[in-house]
Image (tube, rainbow, N blue to C red):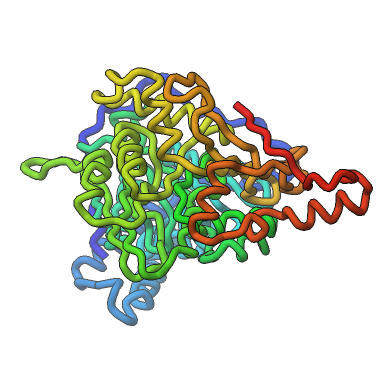
Length: 492
């Protein structure tokens, strides 16, 4: 394989900057010690980098193509030859030191030349869900169950990071991305669905490429029932969301990064009528809608004569594509206002947003709509009306020690004070009384949602546990007047 280093025009390392390593605790000591040992070997003149360079030159002269069957065995043979040559040179006094662990050097050389270097192990480890590269010698991980922190392996240098990223993007041909330093920031999707975010060197303190990989879970969920089995939400909450999808109501899914927002969106969309046309716009391809008539688009960076295509432009063109359902992978900037206009025009849809609660998702949606040039001139009352008309349901998710969980679901009502209302009117439907508690129905009945269910023939009993609540109250003697199990209340 010919993996020549790329020059991305970065200023040299800033003198005096240094990577700080946190104090190790418990099980982290062994990993950090192993990591420091590898780093010290490289800095002390480990043969690895030189052996890799020699193997690369020989592979290039042989026109060795690693995509051709049998070529990886040939690469291993080249590595073994170079290891043997190094040892021979050491015995002849041509080298100052021999190779203490040839098997480890051979393995690392193969991973660096044919795979993804120190990222290979992490990409294959199902316990790892986030990979963070702050510098060549500073790789961190987050795990589902195991301890998070430093990864024991390191890159040789920035060129090694660049070669690895180039290989990742080459293998992710479906993302239509190449490493482009002039863009500053880049996003792509890897073949397994993992999300790659790159910060180029001229933007990073210390002058190093920074990389984040949000890994795909390895399990392709396609229905809400599967999320119930994974304890992300309750059976009753899943029944409500199925009714929401069946009634063609618009939904915003809010939460922090890695909290399962996109997973929930995909699973909810999996219950859509198969005859519907779905139009999707994203920064990079992430959603996977299991329907036939799906038109998915991603943004494009500008370069040379190629014009930039922003998420706002993609969303603004939704209505020209005859959507029954419009989906924006994540709303965070000027695409918010055209999305709200689309959803308030009769087209229903879904999106995700970063927010600390379901209520905060509504205020954030209003706030980022004001960032758009057109939104800055709209009065607050008009934006409140637009948000309340466009959004029917908000779901909030969190990542807990046991994985992503839905923490609350609320229904958006018509503004209580009419179009001049300063607050959103909502009905909380499901929540958790404590952080690790069960997801339970609030006992409240949504007004606007209930009317929408009725229009399409969905009974409230099919969407909310009304009958169970009534039976429980009768058994407890709490409903002696027979007035019904719940009283509608509205929270603002």
